[in-house]
Image (tube, rainbow, N blue to C red):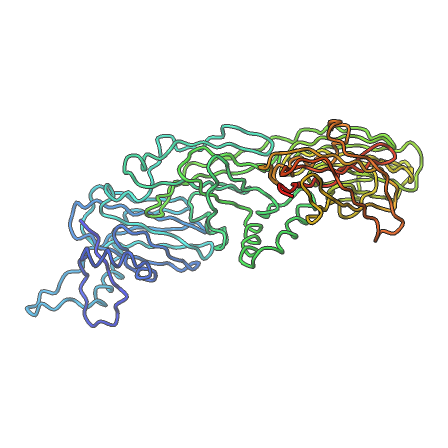
Length: 566
């Protein structure tokens, strides 16, 4: 048996009978969600979204025309706990006069108002709760809802065909979300798949919600806390889990000030819409990601020793209606205590850092000092350096290439250096700390360390290149290596280890070494013609500048090709 719409909004009509449902017309109306937005009628088999003002009850009506009709009513609170009750009144009798005129609608409403009817079910709380009856009597059903805490969103779904409709995905026999792996920054979740997709062949996807406050009992409760600009995230690429706690992107508080700087710098390139979404994420401190139909998911980039709450929702992609699994929570493991290596005054230390890892160094000068100088040579991608003097942060910088930092000294001061690696891959660097200002471990470099090739001077057996120098007299060594024509810029970038010196090269690859400097920086440029090459071949050229202490720095490699015909 079907539910019938009680169109109570048609108050302007002089006489109106409770209507029966025309299936074709009804299906068209159900697709138009705006028809039921402010209506007091509940459609059969369609979920409605509505809003409650605090302490202001709202009533909905529908009719069951025949006895022994199956009935299911589901109420989903979103923002706050609700009080709701379902009651049954008798159907208004038609007038028995010979005219056959229907009873006016306002008199029908009067009967409903005066007769409170029989209460069938009541509930108070924020759970998704349902009234289900295999056999219901005919009559006028009234659903009354009240929010006593605050204005609130909610959803209502009613149907007289619960067995065939099943718009909500069914939970498996074990609806719990399990934590299968726990680390310092990662948590792996697993859950049993919903039988809805396989049995009813309905498209189902899973959405995972992560936050630091509490578990959620419905997806609309989650969406109520997330900005409209950030309701859904794109699914991760196959084979690669999404990392919802990328702090500089999603607004979670970073453990130092540098994340704020990165987020601020990155936000300048974002559109206004994305910036608003970022602010909403930061305020909500909650993230949702829909991952398709897989039922194992790894959350990464979490903070160590922090409690997180995890919820999973099965979403029927056809109806967009969802069911909540039993959520879980877990505390990530404590961060492993870092071993701190000692830096000796004036000695270069080689440091290797895993991807996204950190290393700690300690420098304790044995004598009083006015200044401390740190020299850092990042061999690959940029690294981050923090220096604390007696616990106080005195330096924070990103380092690319060779950098020098000079700090004011302090008697008996101790320095803790934290080096943080790149997110792209492993990092290598050289670092030296000294209280002797004239101790310069690395050669001076120009701002531009590119090698320029002159195309017009290119021949079948030679190429001419140039590079910049400095005012300091340094030794420059040139090396060449023949490569395949398919050698790409990406391969060249992978070989950009600036710390790999001439000692790592074959003797046959050496072209020459020479000394060069210029008191005038405007004229600090030198050229060299590299001869003895083969026609139509590609070569990778490298220039190394070697300092007085023997440490070298490599310029950016240059890919050149000789002419094939001359």
